[in-house]
Each structure stands twice: as structure tokens, then as C-alpha cells.
Length: 345
Image (cartoon, rainbow, N blue to C red):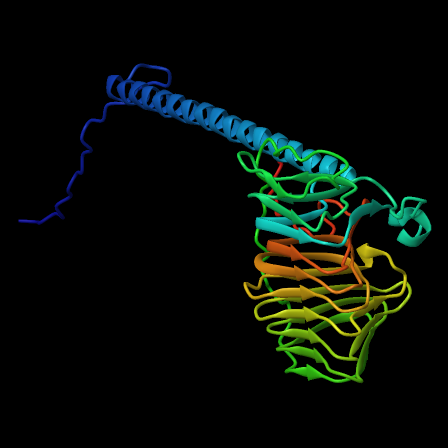
């Protein structure tokens, strides 16, 4: 018997082919579901974007409104700067004036001396004020207003007041000065030195008898503690110089030879103090400048007088010291306004 090789025949299982374009129920259902899901997702995204746009619009509108309000406040502050609303001599908790005299002048028109007329005074726009009562004694001539707080009165001899003694409509808002030195302290200063344009900081500052501190250019002087010029010691503010004294704590005393402001322009000398101790301007030298120490007892005495403006927690003037308001000083000359302006998109 002859054997022949065995041959296997492989047969493919029958396949089902779908012509292109013909319907497949399962695939069609999947597409429909996908389209529906995509539509839902797109609708949700569109809704979210719409809400976001409205939210952003509301935020922008709020910022815009806040900006307008802040801008209006700045405009009001500028109005007060131009009109000198907040200049003058002010004792937050009390003010007493004994002897001396008060008047006004315009340093932009020259020195106080050349503006004094036949009556012995310059202008009639002096302002003496307080957030409490005011006491006058010795019949001090005040060529201007003496204005206590609402509900308070001016007591004593008011016959020398040429204008109003009626209470103010509202109390004055007096912000504290915040001492924030920008550099490290260089230790204590005592002696003689010339300070040129720049920023200086000391733990204390003392000009004793026979010594002189001279300031030229634009000088920022930061003093952590006591500031003292006494005896025959003297500070000299050279022509064209500007000096700002920032004080943190301790006593502030300008007496004896005082600070000689050679231009006699009060805006060239500014004192800003955060101290709760006594601030004293006395002696025979005239002080041409502004003093802002709203937390401190303030004393102006001696024969030199203060030409400019002064704010203190309590303000007491005595002796022959006169108070001579410079109408060039307004809100911002020695007074800080801190305004936070919202970002405007």
C-alpha cells in the first residue's frame, strides 16, 4: 500500500462585512452619546465663562468705583492743601495762650518783617484751634480765628481776637506720625558738623553750648531718641537748604541759639515727631518751620516766636513768643496723608 501525504485544508470562518455607508447600530449609538456628552460639557464651559466674565466685570466695576472714591478723596486733600484748611496752631486735647500775639503772613511774598503794617502785625488770617476748649490769658492779640471743638468754648480774655471764637462744626482728624527710619542708626551725635544732602540717622542728637550743626542741600535727619539744641549751641539752615527732622521718642528741645533758618521760609524746616514726651521751642531765636507732634505736650515760649505752624497733643504758649502762621503751609507741609489707592485695571 502506498502512503500519500495528508494535506490539511484550513478553512476560514465566514466573516460579515459591512459596506461603507451602511448602518451600524452600536457605533451610531456611541456617536450620539458622545455628541450629547460633548454638548453638555460645552454648555457647562460656556456657562462658567459667562459667570466668570460677569464676576470679572463686577470686580472691575468695584475697583473702578473704589478708584473714583479714592481719587475724589485725593482731590479733596489737594483742595485742602491749596486752601490751607489744616494749617495753623492746634492743640488736640487743649490749647492755652498767655501773652504774645498771633498773626499771619505769606512767605511767598517775602519775610514776615516786611509784611508788618502800622498796627504791628502782618496778616489777619491766624488760626488757633483745638479738639477741646481753648484758654486765653493776658489779653493776647489774635489777628484771626480762635476755634474750639463742638460743645466747647474759648475762655479767658477774648477781647483781642479779631475774628471768630465760635466752635468748629466738626472735630479735626489728627493722624499720629509713624516713625519708620529707612537706614540703620549711626550711634549718638554730639558736637559740630556740616550735613550735606542725604539721609542721616542717630540714636540721639545733641548740639551743646559752643557747637554748631549746619545743614546744606536737602537733608533728612532721623533721630531715635532725644533731640537737643541748648545753651549757645546752634543749628544753621543754609540758604536754599531743606531740613526734615524725624523723631521717634524722647524729648525734642530747641532752645538757646535755636535753629537759624537763614531764608526765613517755614516750609524749608519740618519737624515730624512720634514722641509722647515734651516738644519745646523756646529761647531768643525765631523758629521758622512747622512742627507736627500730635502725641506730645507742646511748649512754645521765650521771645523768638514760631513762624509757620504747629500741632501738638496739648499746646501751651507763654511769654513774648508770638505765633505767626505762614499761609503757604497747608495739609502736606509737615503733615502726612496716607491714602491707599486701589489698582486700576
